[in-house]
Amino acid sequence: MQPTLNPDSNQLKKDVVLFNHWAIDRCDYNIGDVVTLRHPDQPEKTVIKRIVALEGDVVQTRSPYPEAHVRIPRGHCWVEGDEMFHSKDSNHYGPVPLGLVRSRVEYVLYPLNRFGRIPDKPRGSRVRYAPGHKVYNRLDHE
Image (tube, rainbow, N blue to C red):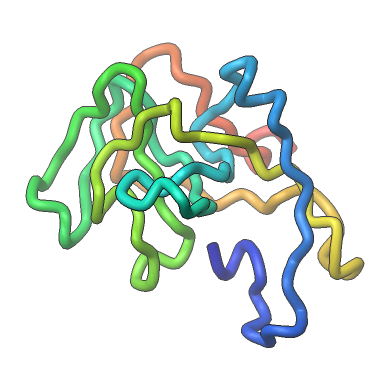
């Protein structure tokens, strides 16, 4: 999830973050949230990605995904890393079942100079959102 998390490539300075497991228990996730999830192909691994689309949305995919556009099926989401050229995400394995999502990443706790909410990533024009979806972007509310 670089550069959002661990923007400094120094291996001794890793971000410590706060996870909200209850948000997922209440199905309280939105487009733009950074979440932890079990890797769809390797369930023993946990990955951190950003929710880009939810069920009913249409995503313009990137390589290596075989189709140019995908409508997200019911009970699934589309996740991507913030560094598009170095991320294995839904563009590799497709829509992800929401049941694999484990927690929402809320805050960076350490290092102290980065303390605060997880930064938003500006929304692009690659997604057509289904009516009624709450697209979360703090930049729109400040």
